[in-house]
Amino acid sequence: MISPKSEYKTSNEMEELKHLLSLDHKKILELGCGKAEITRFIAATGLEREVIATEVDKVQHTNNMLIKDIPNVTFLMAGAEDIPLEDESIDVVLMFKSLHHVPVDLMSHAFKEIKRVLKQGGVVYISEPVFNGDFNEVLRIFHDEENVREMAYRAINHAISSKEFLSVKEMFFNVPLFFDSFESFEKNIINVTHSHHQLSDALIQRVKEQFSINIKDDGAHFLMPIRVNLLKK
Image (cartoon, rainbow, N blue to C red; front, side, top):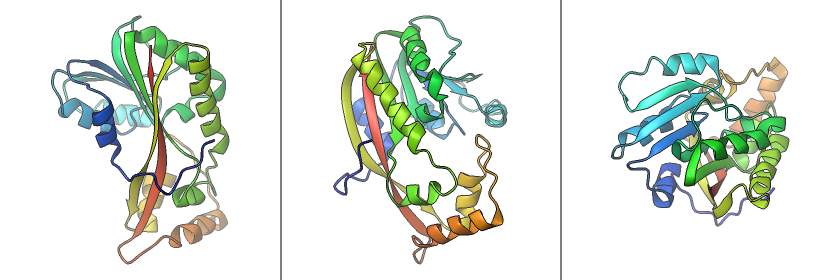
């Protein structure tokens, strides 16, 4: 795993995406859309964009289906390893911190599915958190993702080395994160519906102590290192 460097620029991921890709007049597939926050941004900030957003978490998908104010978005219950779309029907595939959530033994098949639904010349944007940094030191106490993130990176490199995809660009940057309290961190990170963290009181205390190291007057600030791989079919 490539480690983050202090000289990485701090950036908003949507700004980086905007510089890398033109999404206007495109049919876009977002795999693992979560709460559809990025989905909404993508759908509402361009021209003639058709977005299909998938999610495997049943609770979150049910919530997403209640969204009615972004009519150019279709929500589907599906994973990257089994995409219910026609061959060569998509211009751009987006994965925001979701590849490492694909079961490790299905990652290779997920890339085959992505290749299948992409048009010739279509692109894949994959962002993944790098296993390093202060935020990671808090997270790893109860949710150590070192292995799955490494497997995700290996799957990307295998897709390139096997010539399924051409590597266009690899880049790194830091994304700022802020929590005004530990309760906010607990609500938004520990108690997410797509993971089932069963933390004992003792473990919660360990997490809280590590989190408190980063608390300033206004709350806890972190920089999460991100790697982006841009691939082309």
